[in-house]
Structure formats: C-alpha cells, structure tokens
Amino acid sequence: MTPRSRVVGGVDAERGEFPWQVSLHMKDVGHACGASLINENWLVTAAHCVKDRFDGRPSMPSTWEAFLGLKTQKESSKEVQRRFLKQVIPHPNYNYDTYDNDIALMELERPVIYSDFIKPICLPAPQHIFEVGKQVYITGWGALREGAATILQKAEVRIINQTVCNTLMGGEITNQMLCAGVLQGGVDACQGDSGGPLSSKEGKRMFLAGVVSWGEGCARKNRPGIYTRVTKFLGWIKEKTGV
Picture 1 (cartoon, rainbow, N blue to C red):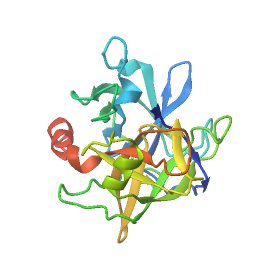
Picture 2: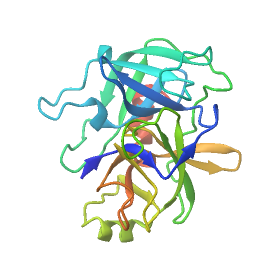
Picture 3: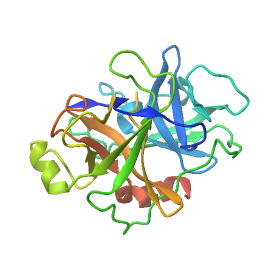
Picture 4: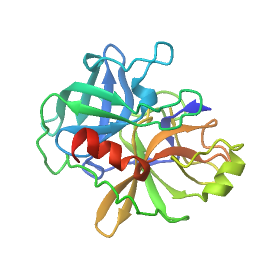
C-alpha cells in the first residue's frame, strides 16, 4: 500500500485545461503533493500529505506554498499565483494504516484571483453517482517512471466496480474510497500526485469525484488506483469551509 506520486501513461495537459489543479510545495523540498481549488480560499488534498504518521499532528501551514496556474514546474509566468497557507485541516478520522478518510482541507492566506488558468472545480451533490465505466481524468506532475514531470500530465481512466475492486485489492476498500484505473495496466496516478484531483466531466462542468490516495505498485495489471470518495465528505467540507 503506497501513497501515489506520478501519472503514468499520460500526456501533456494544455495550459488552463485543469485550472483547479494546485501544486503543493513543501519548504526546501519543492513539489510534494497535488490539491484541488474548490473556491477562492480553499483547497482539497489528501490527509496523508499533511499529517505526520509518527506524532499524529498536521503539518504547520508555514511548511507549504500553493502554486496555481502552473503548467510546468519552476515556471514564473504572469498566469501563476503563489499563496501561503492560513490553516491545514486533516480529516479527524483519517487512518494511517488503511488510508480511510484520506482527505484534508487547506485555507489560503489570501484569496486567489480567478482567470482563464485558475478556476475552482465543482463539488458533486451528495447523491451523485459516478457510474462504473465512466471516463474520468487524473492529473499531476509527480514522476514519470524516474524523475518528476516538468509539464502537468493528464491521463484517462475509468471508474471501477467497488466489489470487483475490493476483491482485487484484498478487501481493503472502504465505502469512503473510489476505484479508478485501466485494469490491463499501463495508466495510473502513482506517488507527487497524492492529493490531486480525480476529475469527472458532466456536460460542460467538471466535478471532483475523488482525491488521489493510494495503490499497489504503479500502473500494474488488476491494481487500480484508489481515491477518496468526495461525496462522503461534503458535510465535513461545508462545515469547515462553507463551500
């Protein structure tokens, strides 16, 4: 069971194609996780990105910087906005061993300014069902086989039946998790992309179906990627953010 860190089997994303994609940089490390912009003040990411396994405390907001509007890492174009963080809120029931409830919120120190390259992703309704077989998108920088991708990568995967996924993954899939991938292998979100979005297109809008969480190996046959199921956490998100 490993956190995810790269998009494998993907292609370069166009600038502004996934304008809610955030790159979270850890001080003195650089790009460490992804996140999704849900309004001008708040990001959604994975709890395992921000909570220390050994002392159980969330990382200090000062540990992180959020970059929005990026296409390539290390660029400094006028489209890019950098923000410091005001607070980091991992889900109180996050489980380090099973990755259950692997979701966290981050409040920006000041709001972002929306543009063609920086826009929020929609949150789904609580009753929204992402149908089995539906095509969804994974995005991130992470690492392509070896080393980090400099250009934002995107890949298409499909929602996988929960029961099938639970069988494939040895009974480790909870109701708070969502499975997506290509069962023959070759496409996946693996470690750097942790916390990033699983995006689903519905009409002309894109919805946040999942948060990149964990998997076994990378792009292996019959080993789908596992995502935090966002519809299970809408009440908690609203309570903390008002979104």
